[in-house]
Length: 249
Image 1: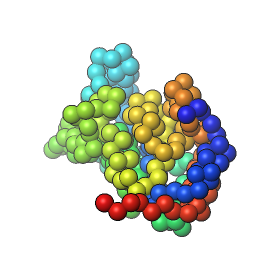
Image 2 (image 1 turned 180 degrees about the horizontal axis):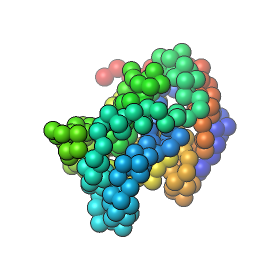
Image 3 (image 1 turned 30 degrees about the vertical axis):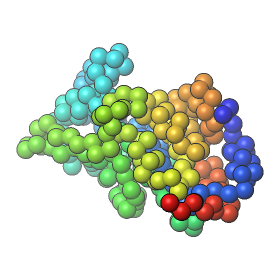
Image 4 (image 1 turned 180 degrees about the vertical axis):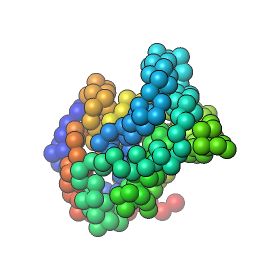
């Protein structure tokens, strides 16, 4: 498909005259749900030298994203509670998220946050904004022993056998698959790594920054966004279409 906008996507959906039984939106966290990269905020604040060193190694291909993330956060000496307080106090959510949640609630749709990042900073941000009940797919980090000790990491949604594009810690395609064949999937993201693979597999895509450029270069139909208002409008329009009944198995 060639790149298009919301109007083209809406016309296509209406022309089809139907939709699947559910609408499932899967959204990235850093720089998508939030207006900034929360991991970078914390690492720049508490481990700037490690951030520069390991991000350089990652960009040059010496280490994977997972290795970069673990090495960088293991370099943080500050207590977890201090990092979480900074995340809760300083991170803002992208405009229009609450309206999107209401639109999904009106049509019994669902929103899943899929992030290659870690729960130690995602959860306090969501809790601060009253969104602790959202479904989140991400990595887990638990500090071993003292406040300055290294972390133990777990990635429940890693695809270690057949990684999509690399070791991104979380396979966002799995979040799309979790919605099942009965769902119309909408992916919202900004990145060039795990987001790019998810964009190839979603029914509809909203993209910004690096992901938008990749979609344009790859011929993936994607609508630009800077806030959640176009996503909300599209979900509401799609939700008004008649549902397609799946064939019984």
